[in-house]
Image (cartoon, rainbow, N blue to C red; front, side):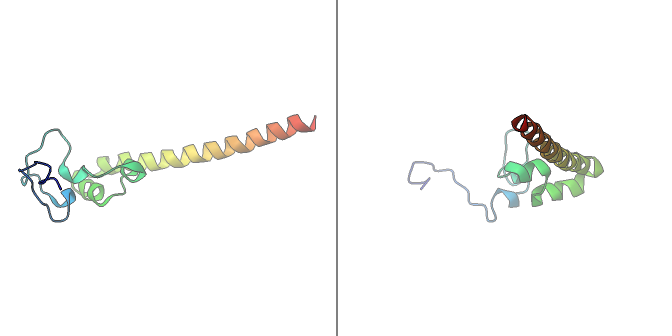
Length: 97
């Protein structure tokens, strides 16, 4: 489809950009190609295979960032749950008066 649309300099990468090594392709910007398809909660928490591979190479500091995000997410969810319970009690007290 891209070739028919006029693009002539195309490259097929078996396994997608996650399989590309840094020396395989020229790139612009600081992010490696294997991180190109990441997004959402899994990217934020570092759950993707590419991020675990990078964490193994980078060491504990890289892993600590994603662990802190996970702990923060649990603390936020817990705070929202407790806040919702307290708000429910306040509303119930207002209706009973």
